[in-house]
Length: 376
Image (tube, rainbow, N blue to C red; front, side, top):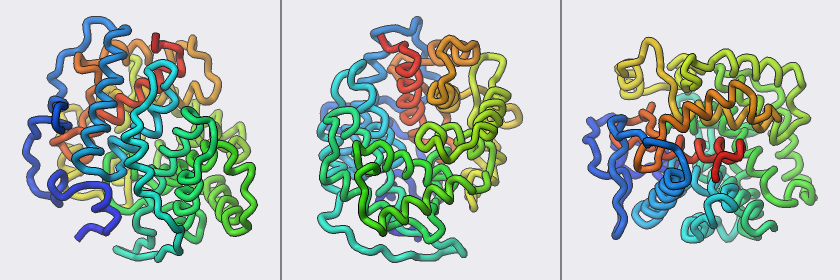
């Protein structure tokens, strides 16, 4: 049986454990909205431009609203990426959907209570930590980019999130979801750090001794954590953006060199170049192993939309100019690879039926383009 917090994120109908997964007719669907199944066969756009940008924004909106109305849970692959990335794009794409915000707000507990640590397969963790982190990050980003001020529900969500922190200062990633989200403890803890730094004025005004101690523990763990894979190593670039004092210049330089070395001849990057399959998580299911090892490009992974966009984001967050050749080649790849629906296709590295990582990749692609002033 899956842990309770896993069930909050993924519905049994969508992800029954290790059973054969039928191809879904629609990736997202609710009354009045049908988003076609994500597939690599979808035609690419003839030319990237204003109309294809609008199509991408509509895809994000439609997917998020479908999930809110049909699933009503905070997750790492649809509403999580929507609320964490869409508010920052308000100037270019218009206001994000308040219905998604309201869905997040209603999951914030009225009272913050102590949480109980549990253990399975020798791993100790706090149930619901993923949900709490994604919710807190989305609410904080909304406050930062939409209202400009800290809301009571965001503050309470952050407090509840920190109540799920492990004793060593990290947030433990338990269970399998879409690679790269909810994989290594460093990746998950970094997202918690993003949440506390995004919330307007929260960290600077924090006075509670217990919460301050938890923040200090998180910082210490992030500073000293040993990387599980190359993905963790390049994530030092994002940590340097959110908490600059935790990453020495030598680590930043090494991470940027590593990231640059992974760029393909076509200008893109591949997520699968950043980790051995077994190093993504403490336990990889046979289903995931068979899926990834069975991909046509398993021996030599092709460039993908998520990692190409994320590489650009990491470089821009570390003040690499948009005119840099590496970024320009990556942008050219993204513009070539957008599909006519507006999204950026990517093969799921978790389950093959819905390919929600296509949604994650689209959110990241728009973020990368925005950071390079390409959303006109």
